Image (cartoon, rainbow, N blue to C red):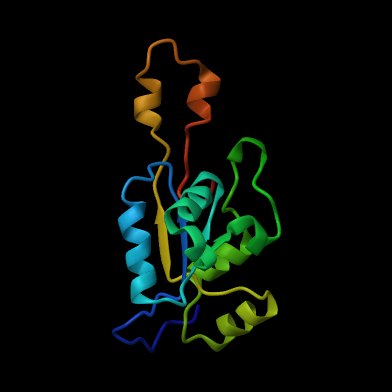
Length: 147
């Protein structure tokens, strides 16, 4: 296993992924990200993607549907949105690794500098009266995997 031997003090956030069930605060967070780096590309999923388009309006050019980036639609019901080789390569890439840079180039992937996920409200869902198994199952979220 190769070790990271080189690192600097700053990570320029050029690519982010945002996929959240709780969308509160996005209206302040995302415009601030864009203000810091107007060139940022934000990959997003389903309802989060639509919410970011609402927030940004005509300035939503920074936001890209993750399905168009990975070349696959999310599964029926949105159970699998971000489980993809290109995304995981982007999450785990070591910026200073020549072989990782070659992998990014080979797969036309980009490093993901910022990940913003939260889990479905599973605890609140199963606390409801008359919750059935299927409703509970649909609210299981695995960060970076199923949501």
